[in-house]
Length: 236
Image 1 (cartoon, one colour):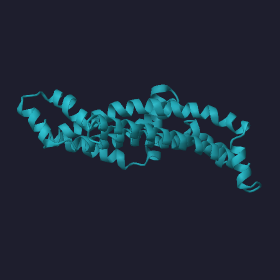
Image 2 (cartoon, helix red, strand yellow):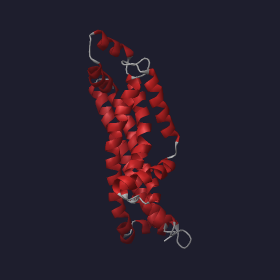
Image 3 (tube, rainbow, N blue to C red):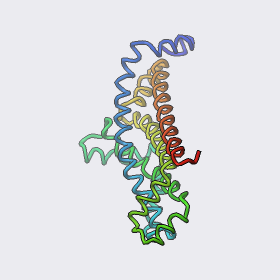
Image 4 (cartoon, rainbow, N blue to C red):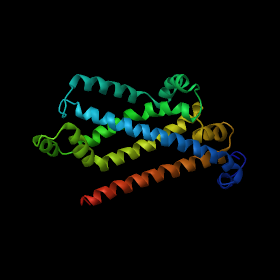
């Protein structure tokens, strides 16, 4: 059903029909599958990348200026590439590693490559907000760098890190929708292949509605967790 032969109210009502959700429901599983796996890899690699960028800065606790500039340049190059281009570039790698360039698993590599540089920079910005005095106090007491990172930098930046991670998850969800156009499946594939290409506006609305609900839920949980941590520290 589309707006060319039906009213907006009829299309919206049809978007909640059984036939539409028989198509949309399986795609939700694929989207969540891609989102969860990509989120795990993005969290691990992004946190490590952000910490390395901070620690090896010329004003960091273990300065390596040349390494930092090279790593920063690589991150900036990856961030400057549109997600669509990264997906196209990484699909051959997916074919090499898993034997095919389509399906949710094939696009996870592209999603990670697209989101890790962005999240790494967000982690870097969050950690740089930690008061320099606390770092200097830890160094003055002879605290090893590893403990400065795990006991000072990460705990102090945790509320900001959670907000950054929330932004990253939402970006991942948006990228999964884009990856659907390249055979990844999920809600993006349904929205484009069934909703747009076949002029099924009701299916398009249903897919978009699910994406909105998922994003709003992630944003709510991220904000709530960040505020909870801040309240426990008596900052609110």
